[in-house]
Amino acid sequence: MTLTFALLSSLVLVLDQALFPSLIESLFVVGPTMNPANPLDYVRLFTHVIGHSSWAHLMGNFAFILLLGPILEEKYGSMGLFIMIAITALVTGLLNVLFLPSALLGASGVVFMMILLISFTNIRQGEIPLTFILIVILYLTQEVVDSVRQDSVAQFAHISGGVIGSLFGFLRPNR
Image 1 (cartoon, rainbow, N blue to C red):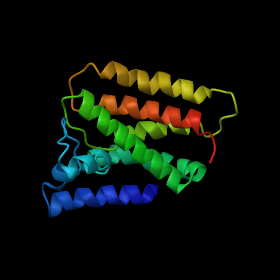
Image 2: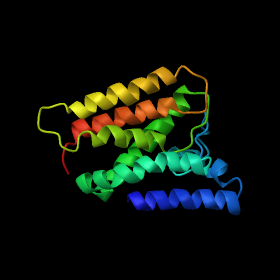
Image 3: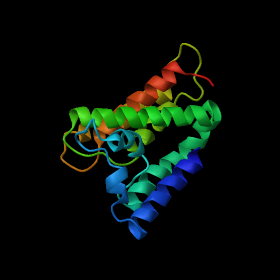
Image 4: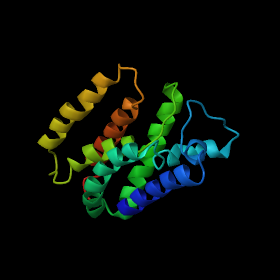
C-alpha cells in the first residue's frame, strides 16, 4: 500500500511535468470552493494527497510516508492503512473547502496522521504513550505557531491530519 501510494504520486508528477502540464491542477487540487454539480470536485477531496507541486514537495512528504508507512501497514494491515489515508484525505479536503480561502495539494495531512499514529504502535490499554505527548508538543505546537504566518504551507492540513492520526491511535489500538 505504502509503495503503491509513493509510486502513484511519483507517476502523477512525471505525467504532469512530461506529458500533461495541467494534470495536477485539474485532478489533484482541492479548490477553496466546491461546485456540487461537478463530480470531479468530489474526487479531488481524495486525490489531492496524490498530487504534488514539485519533486521537493513530493520528497518532503514521502520521506516520512516511506519511513512510517510500512510500520503502520504491518500493524493495521494494507486495507486498514488505506482507509485511514482515505479518511484523512477526505477530512482535510473538506475542512479546507469549508474554512480556508486557499487550495490544497499534497499528502502532508497524511504525513502528520502517520507521525501521530506511529506513537501508538506499542500502546498498552489505558495508557497515553509518552512518545505521543512529545510529538504533540514538538510537531503540532509548531504547526499551530506557524499557522499564523502567511505562506503556502497548509498548516491546517498538518494539524487536522495530526488530530485524525491521534483519534485513530486512541480508537483503534490493534489490528
